[in-house]
Image (cartoon, rainbow, N blue to C red; front, side):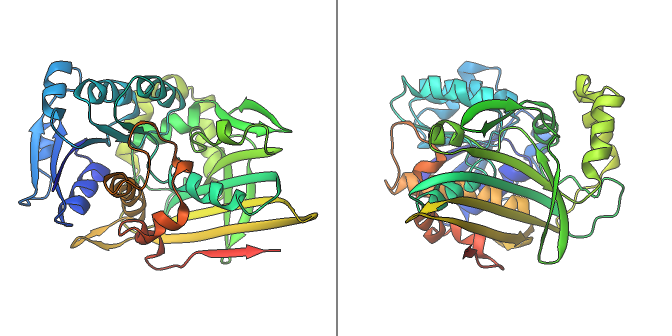
Amino acid sequence: MKDIVVIGAGKIGSTIARMLAHTGDYRVCVADRSAEQLQQVESHEAISTAVVDIADRQALVELLTGKFAVLSAAPFHLTVAIAGAAAEAEIHYLDLTEDVESTRQVKAIAAEAKTAFIPQCGLAPGFISIVANDLTRHFDTLESVRMRVGALPQYPSNALNYNLTWSTDGVINEYIEPCEAIVEGSLIEVPAMEEREEFSLDGVTYEAFNTSGGLGTLCETLKGKVRTLNYKTIRYPGHAAIFKALLNDLGLRHRREVLKDILENALPTTTQDVVVIFVTVSGFRQGRLIQETYANKVYSGVVAGRMQSGIQITTAGSICAVLDLLAEGNIPTTGFVRQEDVSLDTFLANRFGRYYAQKHETERAAG
């Protein structure tokens, strides 16, 4: 059994711990600064807890020393501190951050580290990058890569057509920070919440708009190889207009804590959600312009004996799959590891990766 530390005892962190513990292959210590939060973690013989303040570097390093890996499910602003402690403790590091600047700093830490540093192991960034990179391999030359992901309530019932299904800090951050994109072959930054579009999938109409962080390291990987590369978050129509009013007209982009308080007290959480994944790649193959699409929906379901939301299943399942592949030696065990270094077939064959085919099989269409 390998010893793992999971930082963060929230919805995703506790799901990760449960998934790993129920395999019988991992012992998991869940760490959080809130003793009250840790009391909510499932009681299991392979799960322990520890009260640790990430700001206490010495205590964190002591907790990590001797472990196989640390998985960060903490807010994005704690990413760099946890990565630094992992390097000092000389253990593997994985996280779920969507924050671009944090990932740049993790990459710098990895340059001097003796172990693997694998950021952005969630859904988007994360699995979405694995899918997109796999599709790009089917072309002689690329034209466009368009990535769309959304975690949505199955039964929207408010003006925002949205329920809180994951980190409120993460949602706010991706709605505000600049977004990387490749436009006409050039790597640029575009504003969040802009370039809204509509599309239909399985008879349901969605909107999508720019959000930060979803591309992971694909901009760097595909720079000079593709004309258009972008990532947008999927929501039900009407969401973007209202949220832009909150951010811009009411100035809440400058008062994140106020916005977080409003959202967490006005929008209920739900486990009845659906994760929509939609990736389209076009390019030339044998002189013909071809398009291939990956479309998938993952719903809430029972995992490790407990009902979990779709976003919990996909996010926790993704980082657990990457950890498994690392433990098996199927991905690099030193240095900075990108999500696109992971094979899609290998990922989907993994016991955790199979959650992505839980109810709806992958569709791949070329035309």
